[in-house]
Length: 109
Image 1 (cartoon, rainbow, N blue to C red):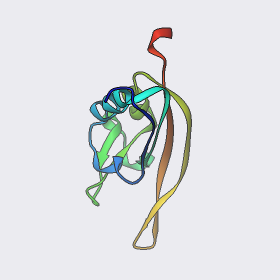
Image 2: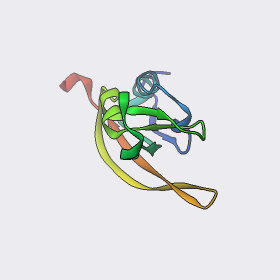
Image 3: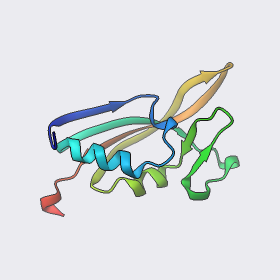
Image 4: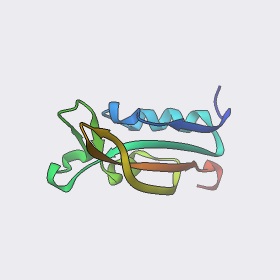
């Protein structure tokens, strides 16, 4: 049901989603006011370029820029975003971001 959840947690999932606006729209719908959506992404490396804010890597996972994520996060405030190694592939650390988004109270907008 709408506005029925206090916390949505998604670890190692968003990197399999190309376009984030629909995902974030549904997260906003499900969360109560001030509810949190915490999720990880793979970070874009400057050498990869950021045309459109999303790239598909050879791993067939998507990397999203912070600007792209926040542009899709209508109705959310950024609590925090931190960069760290989200996984190791063949001994190589894959950098990612952990986002903490708080659902905004739309009545104050």
